[in-house]
Length: 359
Image (cartoon, rainbow, N blue to C red):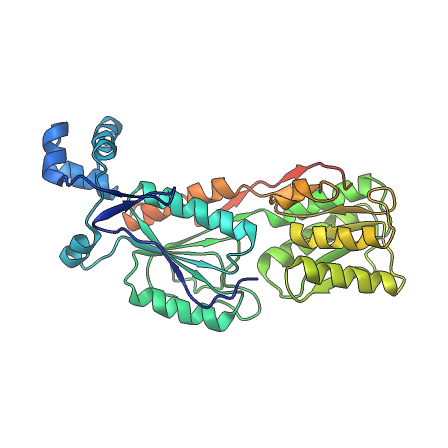
């Protein structure tokens, strides 16, 4: 888990172009007026393309962006802010930047926003509701145009949030019904966990267990529901001692909980772990105890992060489409910023079962 002490801040520098490769290069000065002359497009239309705001044809967009790339044009963010009193910053609240799932989601969003000339202010809360509230206050003071919230929810609810366009990713917020400038995007966690339970049953598990995070965050609750539904339909019971909880979503916590369970004589023939890192920690504890996988016990995770394919035994897991969610989040944020109507306020991505060698 990350410390969450300081925000990670990204921005446009008005004298240098900072590329994703980390190199810094001088920019050849070029103005909107010069872009207009080079493209034969009006200054107003060039401005609309740069700000992705207003009406223009796809051909015009490609023509303007081609000149922008050729001349390494970077908008003068400070001048825009002074002129409009509005930055081109989007705030991102993330619960744990050390978690690969959240890190990849955040990076994909940041890169996609950069392509449409938006910068990001990234705040890591370390799953701390106090930090979350403080960062929301800080992010409001930065006069951001919108917020992408990959946190909130759970037992403490969602703290007061600024009245700016918001995209909620992965977790279900607690909002007043009167709020309309927001969208929720998440994987269908219930269906994903159902797939996990279904394959364990098909592989012959009669005495399964579930390893989960102790906090009642909406993805965790949904995954427990989906798993239990699959077992109930197959008339497979889930014993009370088969509900295993960790204090933190980490390899070490998972290893310790499974080790303690085994020492008490609680041995199960199947394990559904609500994240891949929990699954890897659980798997190593089982292997170190002499339990063969998948012969003696089968194990499945959730997320499909890189460790799933490269552990001691490649992990069967449930895949989440982070790139697709990031793309949709940016697309819908731009619509909200431009006061365009969105089709709906909730979007669900289909989970996918990835079969490897642990089941």
